[in-house]
Image 1 (cartoon, rainbow, N blue to C red):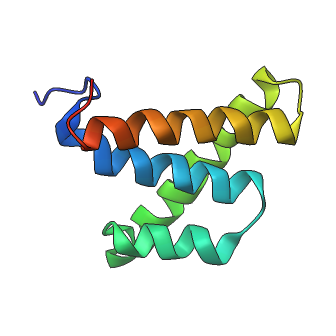
Image 2: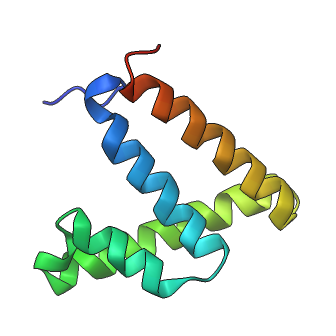
Length: 92
């Protein structure tokens, strides 16, 4: 079983995942599909559909947690992006 804990080795994937969630929150399907294609999801229609469904579900969960306040949701996603970018640069 692989290590599922977020760490430096997963920083790029975590950044992509947050970007995909952000695309779902702001209803930008073109950006979402670009991210999916850049990360191998476009190789299979089933994988792409799964990634879209997962991003939509995750975005809905974050929106729900922030009281469906889009501005607050985007601030949360921006904070996650900064955290994961820091990990990718050798931070903790």
